[in-house]
Image (cartoon, rainbow, N blue to C red; front, side, top):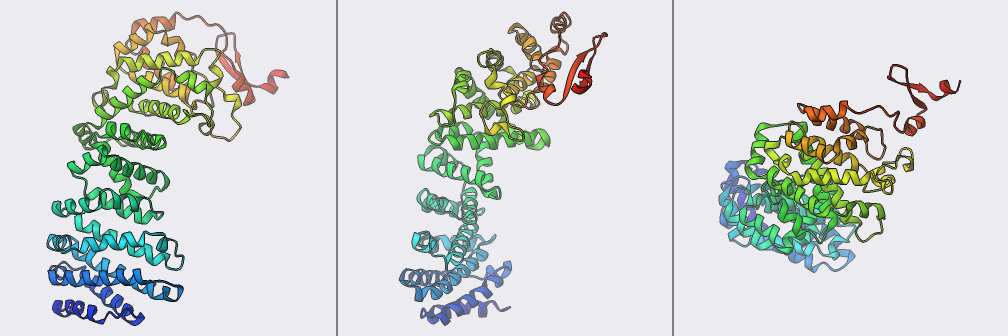
Length: 498
């Protein structure tokens, strides 16, 4: 098929050969497969004319009409052949669009997109989605058609606007509600490539747009390979739209929790693999300052009654998700405060520091202490995070306090004034319910004492009052023993009894 005229001349003959028989569909599919491969070369697809595009439109319409006419089991084999021919038609046009604006524009202006969408609407109906025999062919046709739409909008403002107007919100929502992750990922590619400023605002301001976002959020949680869904959320968050998204999806608390988890992963990656260029880009778009300031503000506003709520909480409670959201906000802040202060501005939020010290103080009250440090109630080998939202709550408070005091004299003094130094020292213990709290407490004390003589004086003036509770050590088969020289030694319990 080296000769372009000969290759494309087959298209005109195809429409005349279509008599909806098994042989005709087989011939259509074989011809389109050859054309699909032929169109991979740029010099070939540049030869495609508007007449050829219209011929493809006729073939797609004929396929759709044949699908509509399918009525019984006897016609299923023919339906499958028709679906496979449709998939090849979409793939041929998909290849014709690659880096070829002329073909992209023709597909939009000649009514091909309307036929593609009509075919998809048909194939997403239960009649086809629940057809077990034709299932693979149905989903293959839908996936190929979405790839065609995706290639139609790449780097083309005009076709992006056209496709968005045709698809938002009803078509997007119908595909996002399907059960096939590969199909959903292809749709996310289309959405991502259409996200200019106008469409971003439409997504986060319209209720249907926010419903689309919640669908994408849940898909990202359920399917780790849904890369285009992650691209959409990352793009929106990096453009400082977290406040609008978070407020807008109040109707779906679980989506809020997943969103906060995704943000936490993003910040953790920034800590683990610092990139100056990446950070500068995030600062430019206000990701760190705007997003983390909003999260801190939400936590400060909602944390007032969190201790009582956590103490009385059960998984069946009406406010279970709301409490879980507050603990997730704190978890994000415990990591976000570890970023450079000039990126986030969190170290200057005195109300956040005051709130965290106050909450940590509340968790040590005797009547609620067991809720936040119930190491003895956690079965061996079970993740306590699955048992209670209070898992790690004290640790995250300690972590925020320690991070905010890093080389920050005003915050060091504030924690001292609030009585936070002995409070932090009391948390230098192993606690299964708060993994690594001992290490974070030691880190916080270190930051409090650095270049702060008054804080150092308070610690040095403390008297030894014996050993703290060693019940957790005894569970591990050892006991802490204080020697005559003041040192502490760990000794096996059996040795002590002997």
